[in-house]
Image (cartoon, rainbow, N blue to C red; front, side, top):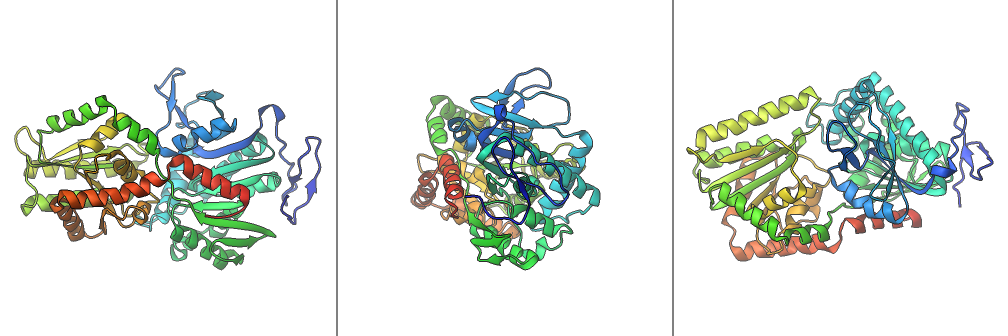
Length: 494
């Protein structure tokens, strides 16, 4: 049954009711030939070009595409998103059984919407304002325009009474925009990054617009319960809605709010780690590193929220005070390229590489550096080989919505070896209680946690890994998607 609203509705020849907004704009009617009863809307499409030219396509990196592939395939679903980059290119209309609809973004829009409002305003604000967010009205106008473009694309693509699942911080206005165009559809929204406490969120000049945008959804999902509570409390304080942390009454509608912790494709990871080629590659990596006693591994997107430099500073002090020794303890740090067109991220890379150089200059041996640094995207099978080669996994972000690297590491350790050092400010910390927990702002605390991981005996390490694997193996990424969609259809939160 459709929710009651105060907006005027009209009947159309295609049998669905459409709400008109106060500007009296024309309703958006779905085009029957291209509609789908299940539509995913995300900033990026699940495919990208393998090369700068040609029509060779491959899956985009990241867990979202793998999480939703089977769901979309089983429902003849359609994915709406940006192809990436600003060069003109035509996305395929179908990829591995998923229908695709591309949203165009010009170079100027990319600068204002993506680099600007999404990643220089929202990203730092939502990550505890580790760096001060920047507020520009021009960026905000671009954010509104691009969100409206996604909303129109979704309104055109979803069949009457269909379901639309919108993802992440770049598209927070889409739920309400879409509801105004298509009140007949069921709308879900999932936030992959943290949602800040009210005291931080209130800095945003357009705070009410963002909250009202999200309240257009029927179900709003977050990674962890405290993020869901942050949103609900802010909504009650800011726009006067009523309800609880899990149920909000807004504009005559019930909006459900809940935590749906995302996870990894455990079956795929376990099957791949049994591959003799990947296991041999793990052994080869250790040989290439000089067969050290201990391999410490960090795999992070190159971003100031990940705490990479702080972690390496702690490790440097451990070499200086004799807790770590060159040739015996070797670090591998993978820094996955991120937002390379942004000058701030160029500076982040420069600063990190200076720290790496200093570590090797101070503590490396001839032919045996203490840290091996890779600034590149690695194939997933190579990442799994690195996970298998590592004795200690270091995941120490200052703030993270979840952090799937931690879960990938745990999932692949089928022999119950390995130790995980994990930031208490990663969403994964709520589930991976067998990790060596650390406050990533505390250099001495980081050193203590790494030292504890080094000293842990085989039985302690096994017990900790068993505890974490029980949690990770309980649900896989398909279960995550299904649990959210089931709650959306039932009108309940987790």
